[in-house]
Amino acid sequence: MKTGLLETRGVSKRFGGLKAVDGVDLTLFSGEILGVLGPNGAGKTVFFNLVSGIYEPTEGEIFFKETRIDGYAPHAIAALGIGRTFQIVKPLKSLTVLENVLVSLGVARYGRLSRIWGPFRSARQLDAAMEVLEKVGLAPLAHRKAGLLPLGTLRRLEIARAMVVGHTLILLDESFSGLRHEEIVSLEALIRTIREREGRTIILIEHNMSVTMGLCDRIVVLDHGRKIAEGTPGEIQSNEQVIEAYLGAAGVDHAP
Image 1 (tube, rainbow, N blue to C red):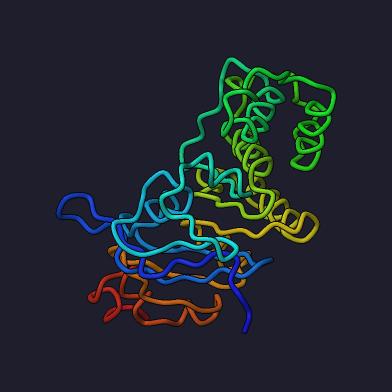
Image 2: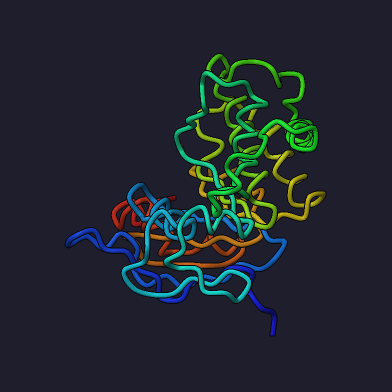
């Protein structure tokens, strides 16, 4: 039986009386691109926050490479090889593109106080940072201040920082949001390259259905925190529960 790279078993998260994630079982296999879909408020980003250690589950368990990781601090999860982006890009605006990536390379230091004082701009680290920038097409902008960059370029910088940390698994939280069509097409190609050439496994949250259906091997759909569907893009497109979650029962009744 094939073992999952990442597994969540009955994972739930409560905020007072609100159950933002409700008993989600999910298995992600190495080399996959898995999409997480759902209407606004479905619990998608909360789910990412659980996997990346920002939140601890109220119930359930999370396993990465068969090691239970729920309860780990975010830096400890990052050190395992899980990187992520965020819906709202927040670069270190006063630093250059290269320096933003160098900061991400510091994840290996966070677990030991004694390692904090080592050099952050060694030749080895600079080479590693530039290599990542080459891969995402940002090498020519390495010395540009991050605060001066347009949104499409900032999305790529976020992915570069996630790649530095996520040498095994990358979580992309609405990385296509706000982009023009040509930027979307270019970013889709980059994500395919990250999977195919870099060997990374990817989970993405995305509201753009065309992107999700075109990129993902499988899709999981959440609604009000619960998993309501799972399958291939074709299976999800024709799933009545998914259609109802997005359109409402009335919308389904009147849909052509």
